[in-house]
Image 1 (tube, protein in one colour):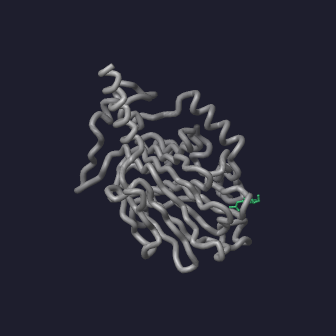
Image 2 (cartoon, rainbow, N blue to C red):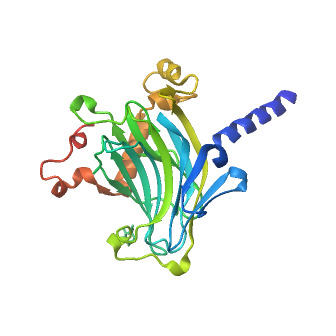
Image 3 (tube, rainbow, N blue to C red):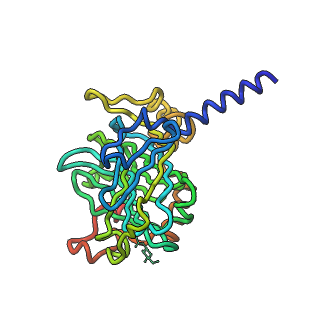
Length: 293
Ligand SMILES: *[C@@H]1O[C@H](CO)[C@@H](O)[C@H](O)[C@H]1NC(C)=O
């Protein structure tokens, strides 16, 4: 009985950790003059957008590899012209960046999930998706798994995109520049919705997107040094390339055959744009990574 009760307490603690941190501790509201607010004792952060300005926040820490999760509930109703972002980025002209962007739409029409990867300042690697649920009804978890071999984008634990390390074939991969996490809600009605034809309806402002469960199981970069959670690389060594369970399994995360098949299924059903198949855009030939598996 007693150990049963203790077990429940232990589980409750683990859940509390899995729920992710406290925005007061982990994030700074970086712009928007009061339009970004930490609520519910630190469990939730709301970003708002009105005609005058959007808002945004950033992580206090910088990371060099990690698994970053965020639960987001997007702007409901008529969200045309709004863009909600969640991305990692380093600084400077040759920066690296890993992007999730959610392009709003008029009521009843679907959001577009836009993804991109910049390496050494070069992007142009857009892939866009529809979601298989209404992202404005509930919180859903969006994750970036960034390790020395992969950048994996996942939605509710389902991988949707895998940008692999093909440095050996001359494709730059983000692995030396620490990145910070950023999130924002802003007005992009000059391009976001149906190519800019549909404008934001300011009579519905302020628009609100909510964030929860920010969790960075990551190597933190501080004072010129990378500090990884205890066991990160050991776990990798012990479980092999396909390590799954345990702390730090993201370090060696690869797609299992099952995850790979699931990703391909999501891509077949929900991908609406892929730079790799946009030959017109690349008269010099499509980027090298598109031809490599
Ligand atoms: C909005 O809805 C229209 C019509 O369903 C669709 O073509 C478009 O891709 C949607 N998303 C955006 C961001 O425009």
